[in-house]
Structure formats: structure tokens, C-alpha cells
Image 1: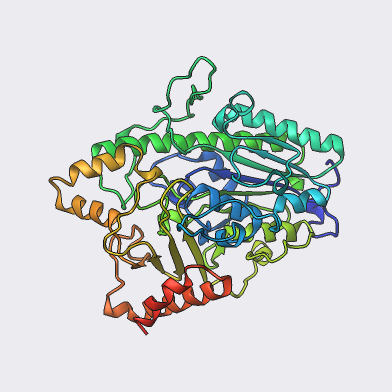
Image 2: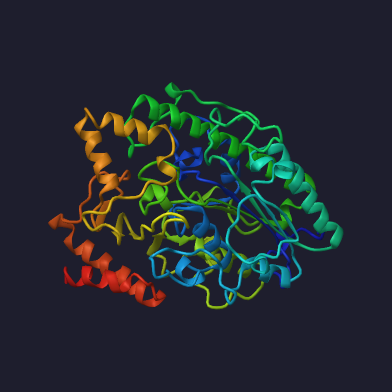
Amino acid sequence: MSLTTRAESPEAPGAGWNVLLITADDIGWDTLGCYGCPTPETTPSLDRFAADALRFERAHVVASVCIPSRTAMQTGRYPHRYFGGIDASGQVGYGVQPDVPTLPEQMKRAGYLTAMLGKVTHHAPPEKFPWDVAFNHWDWENLHFARDPAIFQKRVSEIIGQANAAGKPFYLVVNLADPHRPFPGTEKKPTADGKNGGPFPEPSRVYQPDQITVPGFLPDLPDIRREFAQYLSGVRRADDGVGATLRALRESGEEQNTLVLFLSDHGCPFPFAKENCYLASTKTPLMVRWPGVTRPGSVDHTHFVSAVDLAATILDICGLPDLEDSDGRSFVPLLKGETQPGREQVVTVFHHTPGHPDMPMRGLLRGRYGYVYNAWADGERPYTPGDPFGGLTWKAMREAAKSDPAVEERVRFCLQRTSEELYDYEADPDARKNRINDPELAEVAQRMRADLAAWMRRKKDPLLAQFRPVCLGHG
């Protein structure tokens, strides 16, 4: 709604900030230029946004797969606290329970126009997500599978116009499908009805295999280099979509009245990233622009924040009460450039999506260290392949493993983990050396076990009973 610029009095009662929450699907934190991506010009739009926002260096999503990650953002709860637990077969469910309040519900009650473009969450009753306007990512006619920057610009402009016409502030969630598979250059040709994955617009830059740097957690093989170049082209198209979205906001005249947040739902869809609890799995490129409050170009290197905190933070900024029984905690003091105690660590989780055998994991990050508990790893059960195994990379690793002992060991470890892992991410950001049995880090390991067990007790984590013997075995 067109009022006096809220940046002139950002914390005035009833300021009624518009909220624009932007996510990109599967975009790794270190694929952004502003986060140090070694491949040039992957994210010019996001780099410009970073220069005008506060950027977090220790932000993590709750889970490294879309459904629980996105639902945690909208409920302010960890997955086992909104979906009601794990069934007798060990399968996780992702439906939001009727008694769990959600951010869209709260915003709508407060008089906001609520709108969603693309993927937000699944398996939830419609009343839990009462969008006034919603175009899902599979909507070819209205959203082009959420991969067309021009369509995003058009829809964002329309939604802001609709909010202005109604005299309401807006809560708009924009979810870009890129760089999720299919990557540019791999999309299928369209069927007669145009609903089979394309054609999509070309990214503003297409990368070739010799122009990119392969992440250190993957072997540098020709097909991996080829596929990662395709992925980075998808990153660039996601960036094109962010640029189009922010352009629509700017042209609406509402830019200075709008809180803008950007983050990924999790890391890149490759082995040892997505569907795990490593640094590459859950670290997210969180950036926030709160006009008149956040300092342009500032960076928080110190505090751990979680995507489970987003709902509490947004509601705090908008002067609204937090969701009942929330796991999240507002990080408004950090947006003001202050310190905030109690942000020395963060917990992450993983459960496979419905239809897959569950592979429960828990992760704890504290300082330079990361601890992973693989509840499923019993020395016999193999890791069940999911989305990260769906392209060229895993096939190339399996083939190279036949003749390369180093790759063979990576393949073996990917499929057959140990119950505990410990990494010094300052020295080993790619999680190549598990130091759980290193005597030099014995105290670190025990501290992280104790901290994770304490979190499990507080959050009534159903894995606590299984995890307790691990702690006792080292106590």
C-alpha cells in the first residue's frame, strides 16, 4: 500500500511492512558471487542485492530437502514438531497438523494480502496456507514451471497492484524453481500441451565445462564438470528471476516499504550436499534488506541463525505476535547490528521424503566444527539414492570407482556411512576427513554429543532414545 516510506520510521507501531520472501530451489550457498563463488558472474542480481542488504555467513536451513525445509520456514517448527512424528514403519510424514499455526495464517488474520508463487510446501491442508493468490510451480500456463524471469516480474507486479488496490500490505513468497533439476540444456522437449518441462528461457549466461570450478566434495571428472556447468547455468537463471522480481518491486514504488529476504531451501543436488547434514547441505545464503534498519553491504560472521527463525523474525518486524509454541527465535537484534546471546550453534535434521525409506540424520554446527549423527547407519544398511543421484555425477563416480581407489572410497562412504561424523570445517570445508575418532578432538566430539542430546530432549525428538546409547558409549 502506498503510504509514507516506512524506512522513515521503521519501528513505528502499525508500520505494516510489506514482506517479500524469495527462495531459490537447490542453490548452494557458495554458488553466489557475494559468497565467494570461484566461477565468475554466477549471480550479478544477488550480488547487487547483497551490497544493499545484511548478509549472514552462518545461516542454515532446517533440512536439506524441500518439503521439511520450506514448511519449517512457514511454521517456525522443526519437522517432527509440525508433522506429528514418525509412523510405525519408520516413515516420516510431512503433513502440517491441524493444531500447528502457520505464518500465512497469522499474516492473513492481521490484514495482509497473502500470495505465493512457485513451491512453498506440500501435504498440508489448504486452511493452513490460506493464500489469496497462489500459482504453484507446476502451473505451466500461469507460471511456466517457475523458471521464466519475465513471468515472475509480471506476476509480482500484479500481486503488488492487487494489494495496493485492496489497501493492504502484502506477504509475498516467491519461489524460483531454478537451479533444481532439470538443469538448462537438459530439459525435455514439450509435449503437445506444453507441460513436459520446457522450453524455458535461456539463462543470461550459459557456462561451459572449462569455465567452472568443481566443488571439493566431488571428484573432478569430465561428466561431473559438464553437469556442474549445467547446474551453474541454472543458478544464473535463478539469479535472472531474482533480478526480475526485485525490478517489479522497485517499479511498484513499494521498495522502501518492503522487507526483503532471500535464501535457498538447501544445498546443491549432488552427492554429499542435498539430502545430508553437511555444511554443503544446509548452509544457506541468507540476506535481508530492511530499509532504514539493515546497513547496506554489512555481513554477520558470528551468529548462527536458522530458517526456523524466519517466521518469528518477520512477525516481530511487522509488530505481530509470534506463532504459538514456536521453535524459532527472532533475530531482529542482528538486523540492527547488535549482538544476540544464544546463537553459538544450530541444529539441522534430515528425513527422506515420503515414498523413500527414511534415512534420519541430525547435525549440529558450533564454531568451526560440524557433528553428524546418522541414525540409519548400522554398518549394513546402505544410503538410499535420491535426487542427488539422478544425473551424470553419480554415474561418473560409480564408473571411475572401478579404477580409481580414491573415488572408490568416496562412493563407498557415500553409500555406507558411520553412525557419527565430525568435521573441522575451517580446515576441511568439503567434509573429506571424518575426525570422530581423532583423540585431539575427543572433547569437541563429546561436547557436541551432549549439546545435541540436550536439544533432542528439549524438542522431544523421537530419535533421542536411539541417540542416548551413543552418548553413553562415550561418556
